[in-house]
Image (tube, helix red, strand yellow):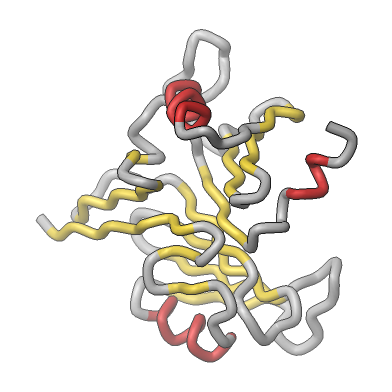
Length: 168
């Protein structure tokens, strides 16, 4: 079986995709993973940033380039079963095979501030990790009625989620 490991390394990026990477390099590296679709390449703006969607048979990654020139965030979606063994890790923790609420406890045990201000969404300001349990298909549910596992994780620059700390 082929294995693929993706390491989340906020605020630096993910395996093979450092934040600040040029648009040309993002597209070329993404093409090595699967089909690439680019949105808003010609005229990115604050509300319509350039996005490079990478479609692999088993997962998707959305790369955002706010100015259309440099990578500003990467959002990895939960891998589906298939021919490859795909693992997404943060500091040794398997992000998509660890139950979501248990993962939150492990992050807090590391001394990280984890905010849960909106249903289904958790963020780690200063480090800039964002997690969602929103699923677009049938998935196993936890006792709280939400998906048992996080469905996507985003990593970005250190200040990405910092505005959520205002007033705390």
